[in-house]
Image (cartoon, rainbow, N blue to C red):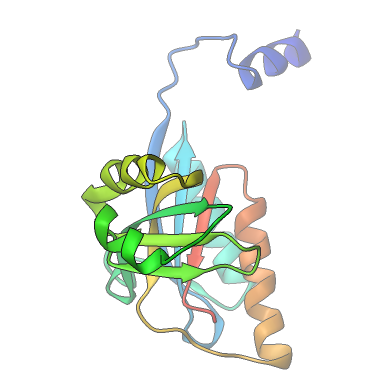
Length: 175
């Protein structure tokens, strides 16, 4: 019965009155790296306890709200591709994006204000761009570069946070 109940709960077939909340946690990782973790949980006490434990095991600290948020801008990002790319900067301006960056895979990231996500996405689609992804993210204002063992300890923290069942996205100031 316990196994069947767990399967039903995990697949969303069991409505036991649990409310899923979206929460954002902030912390400082090793070497002063700022970390923002977006979570979805039905038990915020369990989630905060687990995150605090992960930070502590990896030489970091879970912070208060606003403790590292100042290190990030909240922006909209639309990732799109186009067979015949003319001037992506012109399309970015026309779509209302503030910046455009070419990604390693040949796509372009159009970055704009937090409330401009739908406008940028629809405008790019009208201009013949194939939209691959569109989301609101935390974008680091300044990046910290680390190497060797220092980078390894931060990478281990990020991996542990990403492995947490309740975490959805992890953003850092690591370059």
